Length: 97
Image (cartoon, helix red, strand yellow):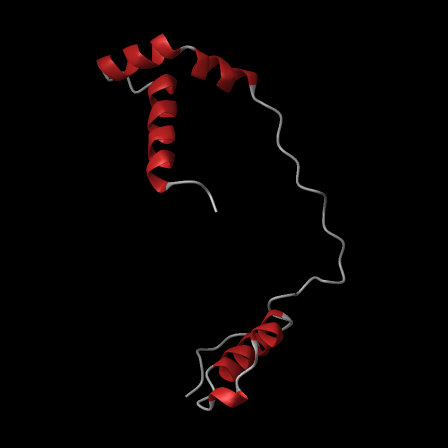
């Protein structure tokens, strides 16, 4: 049985990994070196990752804690409350991976 339709390079890797005989399966190094998982090795990375500059507006909203508290208490559903709720949600998800 073969995987659903898709580009041949995806299918070939999946079929190799699903081989019944474990000794015939590719090693982790072979899998990681497969063209599907390393499609653009020849290309240069677009640019180094940099932290975006701090947004003054967001900093202002976050520093106005009394506004946030009043928004939550009055259930205003404004920017201060939205920011609090987004941060609360992110906290429940844990640190980003």
